[in-house]
Image 1 (cartoon, rainbow, N blue to C red):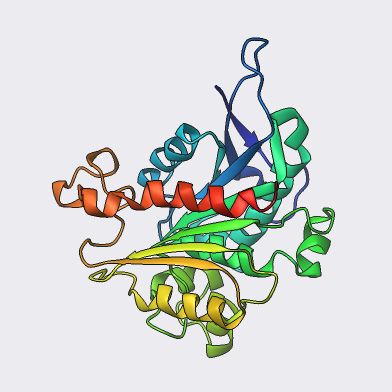
Image 2 (cartoon, rainbow, N blue to C red):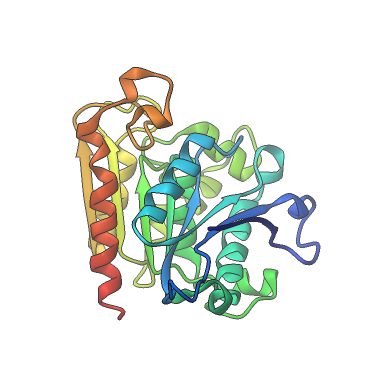
Length: 279
C-alpha cells in the first residue's frame, strides 16, 4: 500500500487553499500481483464544516480498501476558510487530481465515487449535483468533466437548508451567522438535483437528533423526481455520527450496533452493481 498526503492546488485559487490535503491509499504494483484499473472512493468526513472528523475518515477508507478499491480522503477547508463554498472547490479539485493521475494510480476514471457523512454528506451531495456547472471549471481552470461524480454514498447527510436544516453547517458553508433564504436555497442539495446527478446510496437513523432524517428523505424524493437510481436505508435506532457503527469508530459503546453496521457491506454491493454497468 502506498500512502501519501498531497497538496492538490498548484496555484492560489483562494486564501488558504494551500492547506487542503488529499490523503491517498493506493495499492502498490508488483510483478507477482498485477493491478488492474480499480474503482476509487473519495471520502469526506463530517464535522459541520468546522473540522473533519477522523472517525469518518480512516475507518471508512479501510472499508473500501478491503473491498478492492483505491481510496482517498480529503482534508477540505473548514471553519472560516469554508465560507463561500470553498469545500466544493476542494472536492472538485480532488476529483480532478484523481483523474489526472488515474493511469499512474491504476484507477478507472469512469468509476469514481464520493462518500460523505453529515456535513461531509452535504459536500458529497453538493459536488454530485453541481459537478457539471461550467463556472466550477472556470474558477479552477481544469478540464470540463474532470470533477464528475460516478456514484455517491451519503451517511446521515446534511442536505437541506429549508427542510429540517442543521443550522451550523449552513452558517459555516455560507460564512454568515444568519444566512438569507436565497443562500440557504443555493446550498440545499435537493434543489440542485438534475439528470446529471449520479446514482446514490443513502442511509440515516430515524432517531438522529442532530441531523434530522428528513434531510435524507427530501434528497431521495428529489432523486426520484429526476429518475435517478438510489438506494435508501432508514434504521430505527442509533444517534448521529455513528460512522461504521462499531467500537473502532467511537469510544461510546452505544454506537456499537451490528444491525446498523450492515450498511458498509450493502454499500460495497451497491457500488459493484452501479459500476458493473460501466464495464
